[in-house]
Structures are given as structure tokens and as C-alpha cells.
Length: 236
Image 1 (cartoon, rainbow, N blue to C red):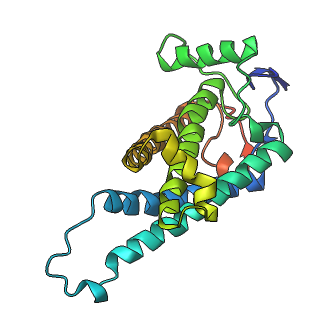
Image 2: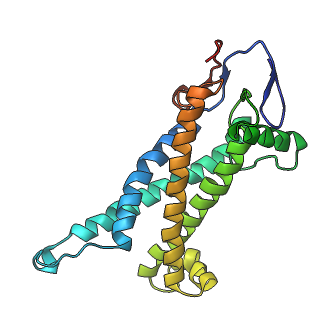
């Protein structure tokens, strides 16, 4: 099987299964999925807290404290998993770093991107076969997930650092974010908008994963379970 080096497009057969996503990549993917659900729910509640009128003495009511604890705990796991994913992008296989470093300096990558775009726009009738993410998916995931995740992690830790005194470790690490944005409310707004930005990505990602698994020439969903990219041998 012949594969175009920078785009990952299969140019010649015979088709054969390829081990694409290593175990740390798959583990990171599903941890991120599990963390984003409670993060989105608790993040929304923190941004627009429900009324607690009639809930009794505030001293004995810890409901919102639990919301914050769940949000902070899941945020820590999300951030650590992201850092581990960055590490694996360095030490892992070729497909592990394509998400963080799309080869935009290569003409073959751009040709692959426009080939896939033409297919999505119904200009090109048949899809290509790809190893790993196709160039258009790489661009979308970098622009939406990677940049969105970095934004929400940095602004989130900056907001978390506010409960610590000036000069303490958290403020030393993330206090600069408040200076960059000018005020805490701006940081909070960007953090909140980043959540919606990532949720839009999630919707698009789920749709495209199911679409390509059904209409494309290779497996998509099962690949993130067993790591193996398998190709369909029959017309569909």
C-alpha cells in the first residue's frame, strides 16, 4: 500500500489494516470526552447560577460548592490529560503529532485538504482513503479543539488563581492572564465563550465521525477504540 507522505492519502493498493492511534492517544480521547460533559454542565451553572431562594440557611447549603468542586476536579484532569497528549505528540508515532503540527508548509497537505473539501461540497464524487486524520480534519481539529482547549485551560486556571493571594504559586503562574485581558470579567467572558466554541467542535466532530464511518472508505469510530484503521473492500 502506497501512502502520500504529508497528507496521509492512500494512492495505491492493496489496502491493508494500519495501527494508527496508540493506546495513550485513545485513552486521552476518551478521558477528554468524559471530562467535557460535567465541565460543560457545571461551567454553565457557574456562569448562570440558579436561585437558591428558600433553600434554607446558606451556611448549611453546599450545593453550589459541589458544583465548583466537580468543575475544578474535572478541569484538572482535563488539563493533565491534555499535557500528557502534548507529551505523546513528541514521543509517539507520526499520527500522534499531526493534530498539533499539521504540515501546512507542504503542498501535498494543501492538495489533500482541497480534495477533501471538494468531496464535502459534492464537487468530487468519491472520497479518498486516508491514514489518520485527513488534512481538512487536521486543520479543523487544530483550529477548534487544540486552540480552544489551550484558551479554556489558561483562562480557567487564571480564574482559579483569583482565590489565592498575590505572590502565591497560582497567581505567579496565571496572574499574567488578567493583565493581558485588562480585567477579570474579560477573562471570564473568554473562558465562557471558549466553552461554546468547544461545544460547537464536539457537535461537528461527532457528526463527521459518524458520517465518515458510514460514507467513507475506512473505519473511523472503531479506530479510536482499537487503534486500527481498517478499509472497506466493497462498494457502499
